[in-house]
Each structure stands twice: as C-alpha cells, then as structure tokens.
Image (cartoon, rainbow, N blue to C red):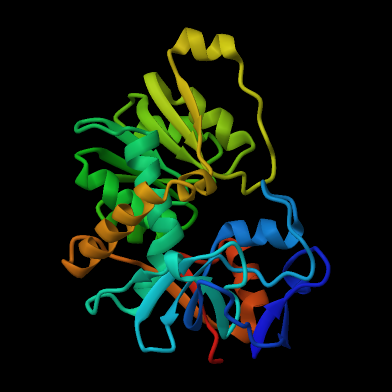
Length: 315
C-alpha cells in the first residue's frame, strides 16, 4: 500500500510517499480502509521529533482517520501514528461510528481538533456567558471550532488571524471581532477589539512574544490556556505576576484527555451530533493527495492555510 513514511527527522522534505507492507490486524484489531487522514500541527513536531512525545523511526505520521471497515461500517479513529496511509490497523475499541449525516471529511476533521476545541473552551478556559475570549489561530481547524463553541456558550469572541481572508472567515463563523495576529502591538490590538477592556480567557498556541502580549491582556481572574508552541519559543511565567494579577495559565495536551475514554466517547458523540444537526460547521480548508503531504506541511507551517487540512490516500 501507499503511505507517507519518514526515515530521518526533519521538516517537510523528509516526508516520503512510498510502498510499505499492508497492516495485519492483531488480536482485537480491525484494518480500516482510510478515506481521509487528518493533518495537525502536532504532525510537524512529530516529523522533527521536537514535541512532547518521543517518536521512533521509521515513522508513518498521522493521528486521525475516517474510513471503512472490511464489513462496510463507516468509522473514525484517533491513532498513536500511522494515519498517513491507505490502510491502518486500529483496535476495535478505538473505532467511533460515523453517522450518515456526517461525511468523511467532517469525521476526520472533528476528532483531534474537535475534542481539543471542546476541552479548551469548556474544561480549561471554563468560559461563562458574558465573558470575552481571544482565540489564536482562529481560522485554523481547532480555532474555527473553538470560535463556534465559545460563541454558543455565550461568550464574546475575538479571533486572531494573520490575513484579511482568514479574519473574514472567523467573523462569518460568529466572532464578534478579529485581530491581526501579526500586529506590532498585539496587546493593544486585543484591547482595542474589546472596547479597551482586558479579556477573560485566551486560547494560546504560538509561544514567543505573543504569549507575553496575551498574558498582559488578561483580566484579573482570567485564564490563559496553552495548547501549543508553534513558534518553538517557550516562555517562563512569574508566579508573583500570576498572584498579583489573579491570573491562571493552564496547559492542555490532548493525550491526557484521550486517556479518559469515559470522557472522550460522549464528547465525540456530541460533536458528531452537532454537525449532523447543522449546529456546528466543520471548515475544511483543503484536501491534499497523500502524495503531496510535504506540500501540505509546507503550507501549514507557512501559515498559508485556513480550516482543517486533510489527506486523500487514494491519490
């Protein structure tokens, strides 16, 4: 079968479209014919081996798929790795049934980023009606879902995005205001978007100077949720500053949520139900041929994309 495999760590250039042996189902496993593979920013960390989990070579990246089982069931699954391929062996207990009203694109797009968005807004930021939340990368896969979930929770939503086109998308999805994420004075831009007032919550994934600006834009009793370090520039936080400002900095890594299968299954069910009912829009930015996974990673890291990025293993 065709797959994307890396034999050395590095950037998009190490992603190779190659023939590999088809997977064989072990005890309790099912081989899924992959219709769509989800692309996540974490995949770019995995290929460089600079993320939170140690990677082993050779590696087939990819942590989410939608597809079909040999008996014809439409399913989706979150994986440890192996999703960038035509087939993948998955434990039966990890398979999630996909409703008829949810297509393959939506199913693959909702898993990791839908769970992340739901956990960020509800569990970590604990957003309440009337509060204001600033969402980084608001035009991305996690961001577009976070904007909608925060809005449905009754929050005022400020979306941060790097282009006029992306900001227009975020506003269409319900954001009350948008900010150029590349603004020279990001704190001032956020305050201006919130009528001069500080915000109650921030969903942060970029790291670097943006972390400092957004933390300073946080109101007393505010919560900053850190769910990525896209710039690979880490920051340290002064405990005195947290105390003086009554601020919280909360870290979130999806792996720890995935360990709680009692929480994950109903959350995925709720996400699929919301899409099926038309209450949640899944924004698919582009579907790349599997053979062009390297280009997809280049576009993602180059901030040239919006919405969820997917791979089509048939091409």
